[in-house]
Each structure stands twice: as structure tokens, then as C-alpha cells.
Image (cartoon, rainbow, N blue to C red):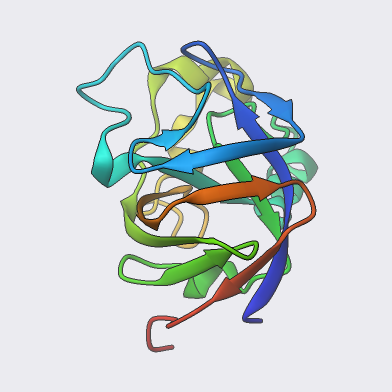
Length: 159
């Protein structure tokens, strides 16, 4: 599907979990109020926003992993999109103003190990489990987003 919604917006002063906020201003460097302890591996213009699908979280929960929106570091938990179509190069419109472009799949970080049965962070690795990874995005158009806002694939990558 090419249209979904923002289920949760999450920020933190650094690290995980990220905690819910009802709305956030999105800048070229990400969500205001969100910080990163490790700037070598997180944050910056090419990794400004981290997204994950609620549907993927539910699959992980059904497998027994302790994962919930924001728990493994995503800023935006979305639902209703065909997550396999959210690939590098895909642009997403968030609400009425914000436009982002997926830049890459995230690499699982050891800081989320406690959330996975047996510490198996590879469960959200694109290489090991295609379609199960979070994604990073750059911000092309800034603005404010709110929980419940529409998410729309603007130019989905070819299927």
C-alpha cells in the first residue's frame, strides 16, 4: 500500500528507548528534541530520521522479542505501508509538510540487544532478514508532524 499513518513519534536525550511525543518539528538533522550519544553511527543529515513499521514490530513481538514503538531507536513508527517497498531512494510525505527520502537500512546496534530473545539483534538486519530492518532517511522538506498524520509513498522504488 502507498498510504499509511504515523502511529508514534519518538525522541530521546540520547540512546534507547525513545519515548513518545504527540508532535515534533522535523529539521534537516532530524526531530527537535532527539539526540544521539554515538554520532559516528547515528544521526547526521543522511541518518536524520529512523523509521520502522508497526507491522514488523508485531511480527517481532509474536516471536517473543521485547520490542515496542520507540524501543529499538526509531523516531517514527508507521503502519499501513507495504514495508518491502520502503527502500533506499523511496520518498515519503509525512503529514502536510514534511518530505523525506530513505537513504539506507539501519545496522542493528548492540544497545538494543536486551530487546531480542537470546540477544539476537540480527533479527532486524536487512542482510539476514530482508524486509525486517528499520530505515534511515534524509529530510528534503522540513515541517511539523503529528501522531496520526498520513504517510504517503511519493515515488516508491520499483517492485
